[in-house]
Image 1 (tube, helix red, strand yellow):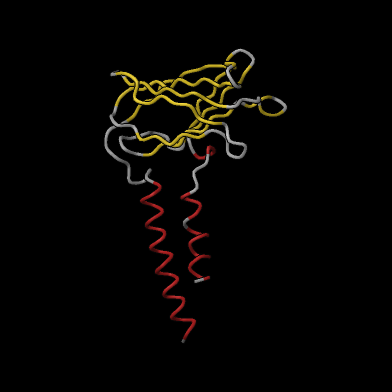
Image 2 (spheres, rainbow, N blue to C red; image 1 turned 120 degrees about the vertical axis):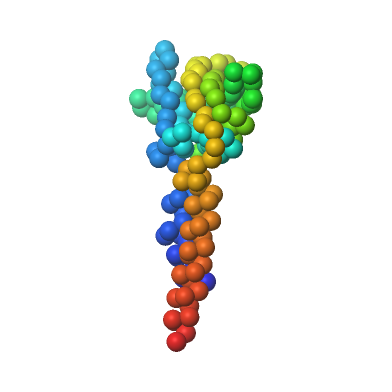
Length: 160
């Protein structure tokens, strides 16, 4: 079992952990604030989970905000609207799967209680079809199977 866990941790976890640094980000200077909104896939596709993380960094630390309001609009209208709490660890994060291909606008409003700090929006294009290489769940499942296979084979050799 230890072998399996080590193999899984070494090969699979780096692909399953999604981080802002491996994706794309929308960065904008809005007044005195620098808005940084990251997402984990370079080209979003229909049905593919996209993880958005919302940052409001300052030159010497982060700006204090309690929540972020997000609205996602397509050419047909609003497809998502909701608030995200700014968690102490990890910050506000949204996982969303776009229902259709096309042009979307992501509107974001950072708030501290009832006070609006800054607002911004940016366009995002979603392509049709699904991407096997961009699907981290598919890659993770494949690596999990490889890890199990390596664990079983190594256990047989260790017994011999």
